[in-house]
Image 1 (cartoon, rainbow, N blue to C red):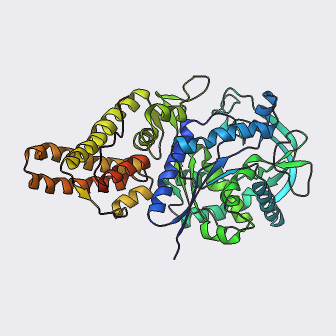
Image 2: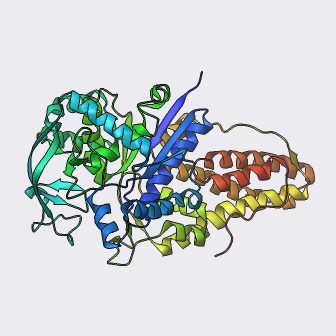
Image 3: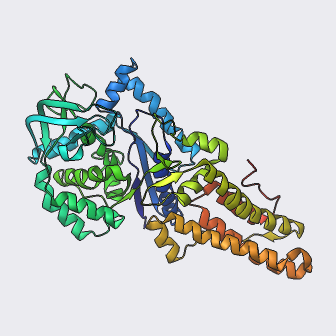
Length: 470
């Protein structure tokens, strides 16, 4: 019997180059997708680009480009992350794809027919940077604290609204009945508190005369959909919804990974929209933190934005994946430091792991050992639980304890001083332990893991140089 698994990242706006914060989200999602595939699941791993909204439109106008051409250029830059980070995603959806826009219109129609979309006058303060309306309590000095350099847009017009307020109790019931709906648990408590305070209906359209770059509202040529309403639907349109019901039922509900700035949209707005359309809620949402650079929040004005593609060119794909998974807390903010990057590259990767593989491979090659046993990865329940609770740094810590122990055992046993028979027995056991290390690393550092496993399967050949000197 087939087992199906679906995981999706959020879709980044195509108004800037890919940054290391989004790389973190992609690598985290990739680890889970690879693990599930190793466990025998049929996996759909989705990502893509969010390409509508006022922010995109203004950028395109400023650069004197057609909005679609502008989006095409930036989407291509995000596609490059697949090779740079060795990502295993199966689906890359753009919200300008025709099938997505048709799905968004069908979704709108279902919510409208359920009485949850209506028109009213709209007068709010709107942050273009967040693509969200802001209440006075959310502002600091009448500016959005996340985008203090941007003037707030004052919008006063007739828009369509979604009856968010109708779903307060249903959302609270969802959280109560699913205590691990949002991980970590303190993010679930945060959204419960937000919903308990009461929900206000939110705008789901813009006047096309003022902002033409969006999905057309069904049966109203004067409006386009609000970017958040349109973009969230990618999580199901990528599965072929509504046309491919078989695939949709196989894979949905799915797992979602998002940054903490997306908590409200993913775990409340999106879930209410699904309820309105008569569709199942998401299965689980994992909320990660942000990455600072050398202790400072990243921004273009500070000149400290870290380019993940540039990092992989200098340090290699698996070294960057290792840093993100080991050094950045799964749930809280973490820091990126070039000095720390070089420190763990040299100590953890080159000296400990790389040296271990070279020692065992070289010693085995000298004795012409042949290992023909091939086996599938096998994970203990404790390790699986850590993976599936997104505790990536703890998984790495446990693997590295075994790496350190095996290195220490080699030093203490000194196989080069022993007779051939005694050395052979030690090396066969060492090769077995190294193979398990490689298997444990498959979801985390796939290229490195493959090299380790290949070096101990079949005839032992020349030791691979996993992490060359910088």
